[in-house]
Amino acid sequence: MGTEAVMGTTSGSSYPSSTIEAAGSGRRAGGATAVAEADPVRAPAVARSSQTRHLTLSYYPWITQSISGAPLHRAILDFADLLQSELRRGMGEATHLKPLDAMEIPDQLAQIKDMPANELTCKIALLNPLGFALINKQVPAIESVAVIRRKIGADPAGPTYKAQLYAHRKTFLTINPEVKLVRGRSMGFGSRQSTSNFLVPAAMLLDAGIHPLNGLSRSEFTGGHDKAAAAVYEGRVEVGAGHDGVIIDLAGKPGYSDAEQVLQRIAWSDAIPSDPVAVHTADPAVRDQVRDALIRVAKPGESTSAGNQVVKRFWGTQEGFEPIASSAYAVLFRHMERLSLSANDMIGKV
Image 1 (spheres, rainbow, N blue to C red):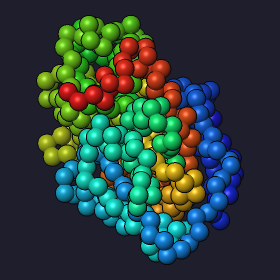
Image 2 (image 1 turned 90 degrees about the horizontal axis):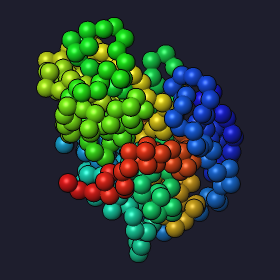
Image 3 (image 1 turned 180 degrees about the vertical axis):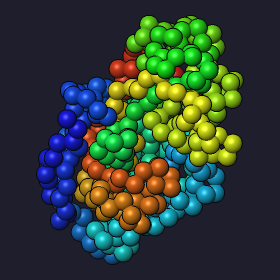
Image 4 (image 1 turned 90 degrees about the vertical axis):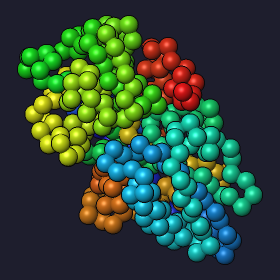
């Protein structure tokens, strides 16, 4: 179960390629059945030269619920500085990485969609899983080169995470509530474009025979994981949806310190491929340099490194990056199909 090691050497480095298995139990059980191996055929390294190469880095404003605005942008700038230094090791000192301002997911996908041209060599995007799946299907040349690893409880760190349904302990008055009890209740989702804040939890309801619209007394898009959790805590909705750490995150906010006692989990989802770093470039060697640089910035097993600590500020994890194949994210389309949701339903602006 979990990650199988498929060793490959790229630009002088070696590391395991990612696989997500369907069988077994634990954090990688179930949902992420398709994927898996990063391509073992590696492009040649980019020749170090004085040629100027420009790259951009984009991100979305709800990449984390712990910081936003200027503090989030500062964290992205610090990450970009480290990544630029590592890119220069492989591509030369004339390599320049420009961090862009935060973009909502539809705008971020529009930005990365067109192939870089003129002086721009590569576009890099810190994406959410669903956003990447949608743009990769539309433009296969946009590839995932790395995935941020996460650790859930006592399970080993790996390239997946989970969604959960949860409620106020007063809602069901039972120690082990089941998803079927959500029928007829009010529901708080987060963002329409979120994998674990909407898409996967909605599919969990459908699995239990509950339509995520007509099977509820009311559904509300609150605007984020933290906002949905706060709405459940405060009694404004009865059931919430979010990522695996949403209750713990809420407990870290002023006024919600007892969130882990007030809220209770109803069910976990199957494993979901974690947040990817995507690239769009015409040069496979540049693609591989970006992948290698990411892994040098935040290497698995080095949680206290400067790179992992910067990543922790905006992605909430210090477990590092590993390679992942773009096909890992195709599993998300099964949820969309079952819910009769189109790409425009998911990323169209409201």
